[in-house]
Image 1: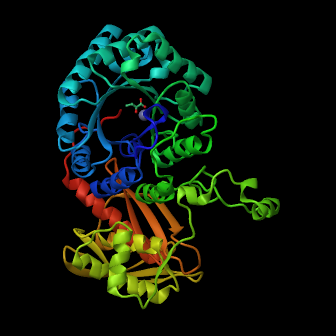
Image 2: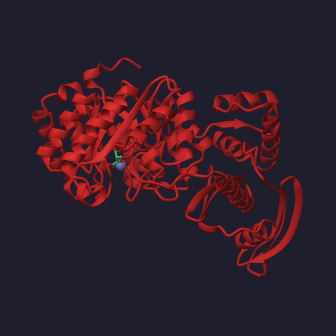
Image 3: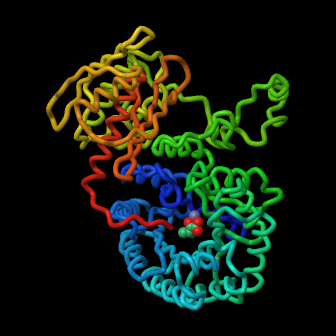
Length: 516
Ligand code: KIV
Ligand code: ZN
């Protein structure tokens, strides 16, 4: 999109796949990262931070694969100040049509002394070296002063000047620990603009954490003070209290352009869809009263509000549900719909499946249409999510459960493990426990259940249940999803999905984990 003049544009830098993924329990596999990256690109995100290539082989692979397919957005990889980090990021980004290396080092006295155990002069030198090295690989280099908001300002201005001289084109000023407040952040960005002599050669970026609930307010204060890039995540995903939420930044800029006269390239109609995708993949539910994407964000139930809304929607609605893509669910297909219409629908929803996969999903769709009066887009998405796991070692076959108040609750389960169908009978404290015990009996493992979450894909008692299960083994955690009109079948599918992911993780050897 080119309609917004550059001077009025705020670049949206999404870090869901890097800073968001650092949130404990939010780890995603390659296929999941790819789906999110493609959706970020489709919604017009300018820069996608796809990962931290030196952190693990999985991170490297994700950045590398995303770099191969994303064409419109800039693909970015994170690197600490060391040469190996920068080179590894460059290697991962090699296939990208548009690429950026994002290198960082801490600049606060506290971090330099205790974390880095480096003197300010050593840090200063590292800035010069890392940015120079990154510039030898790519033209687009971002440099971040970690813990920038708690850094001594003279030193900060000096190192920013050096980073720009060495070739940084974006200077990011993170509020790493979510400590600043809007007026202080405004004055910091203004001071940088006034004191760094070559600041006009770089774009200033803001990156705010939400420990005091101020990440979005601080980011907007930064924009008002002259920053022209905002770093954010979908649903505000991120370590501790998270990062600034992309959807809140973008909708604030769109809704209050009268007082913050800048715009983004984001197609806001995609917001609801991507919020749901990120929530389903990570198992991080969106709170009902969350701004923009919470289930109640556009619900006007109080009688007085409803009355006003009926007379004129603007009485209580500052933005429309349609502007964030919240429309009545599309009724898609019924049980008489044919394979051709079904395939067309899959394509409209962005799925490119092979013939066999289409056949399998179509069979499940017919079963679903038999049970459920109306089948919506969301139902199809949940079915495909569930079905496209082709290389799974463990596959669900059948489940019969006895539930209710007169125990014991029991589960009879059939699974296909390495191509062999096995069955068992198990009891438990309730039907879900019995089901999970049956899985453990058929496939013994030591992983701990960390999260069990159910949500209805659409409205009504015949809605499909979408279940998320988080399993942890040796410090590694994975999220599994499963969908079905039967909550227990969905639960079994979700647990099995998580187990399959854990098995893939076990096979991959990764170097020591690191954090940014
Ligand atoms: O919060 C932070 O300081 C970061 C940097 C790596 C940019 O995430
Ligand atoms: Zn961060």
